[in-house]
Image (cartoon, rainbow, N blue to C red):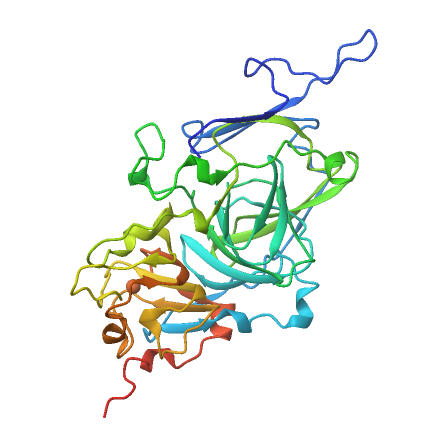
Amino acid sequence: MAYYQAMGSIPPKRHTQHRRPAGRGKQGELYYEELMGEEGFSSDSSLLYHRNIPSTIAGAREWTPGDLSTVPNHPLQPRHLKLHDLFAAKDVKTTDVVTGRRLVLGNGDVRISYVVAGAPSPWYRNGVGDECVYVERGRARVETVFGAFDVAEGDYLVIPRATTHRWIPRRSTKDPLRAYAIEANSHISPPKRYLSKYGQLLEHAPYCERDLRPPQGPLLAEDVGEKASDEAEVYIKHRGNGPGGIGGTVHELPFHPLDVVGWDGCLYPYAFNVADFEPITGRVHQPPPVHQVFEGWNFVICNFVPRKVDYHPLAIPVPYYHSNVDSDEIMFYVDGDYEARKGSGIGKGSVTVHPGGHAHGPQPGASEASIGAEAFDELAVMVDTFRPLDLGEAGRAVDDGQYAGSWNRGRS
Ligand SMILES: [Fe+2]
């Protein structure tokens, strides 16, 4: 994020001595300053002050971060993937957000995974890129070295590359935690066109800094009822030779990862709730870029939120058919009725894949049926990628196999 935050104990001048409280007649031991920065030293960064040397490792072993194999979408077809069929209720208690997520779709720029989780995750660090995790249902506490978040339905949590954190689902909610994880091989940020040259969100942006929640921090081991001396394991996803160029390693730490007494800077995780996205509407149909919320390298993230629809007297509120020839378009249907997909079998928890090279649009009858509608009560999260997406293990497991024929129904 482009705007500055400071939390906890930091010295008045960067790169100068910062010490623990002094003992009797003795000066306190130095804290260990770590700069976490993007693009070498040439983009956003933060300075974190640790109790322990941040490069300390007591041991390392290999970790396989799930089945990351993919197959091409070939023969080319639009697809309907039913994510709610992926996890059996009996398995949720023992599934966590990090090791339990299953790969739905992926390419060399981004991976989309899904998980229904009831167990706390291990400590985790994604060294490949930023993550944007959308909470479909349920609640969780997410503890990071920058501080903690309480996340709930509709929250996006954007977690910068290499941030050590863990997910702790709240068990007391009626819905289990359902999370849709968008993992970039790059950084994820608000759309550039909504930012001033110095990084402030502009007036025409559909959200602003007040809508973004920074971590509540700093957060130390004792703040979560644990000991600073507790040993820990950190599961690291990193560049490697596994499927998708991903590798996994577990680092053993001889101390608790929550050891940051203070930090400041412009790089940190933040949360944003989709209900704070102010939709941009018009007299005639507005193109999908008005729904954009974030972007990464070679992909964008958009959301379709409940909104008033097109108000020209002859408007057709559902979209026109479109060939966005450079993109694969992945829609995750979260809530409400999705007008353009009526009669297609799409429901909550569905994902559609509309690949580049094939036009798509409303199912038969949906355009006529939408005329006169004043508002759409729908909620969907869309990822558009500029390189084709391949099907992951989870995507292959819940492909309904019927969707490609849904525009052909009722024809004689
Ligand atoms: Fe589309």
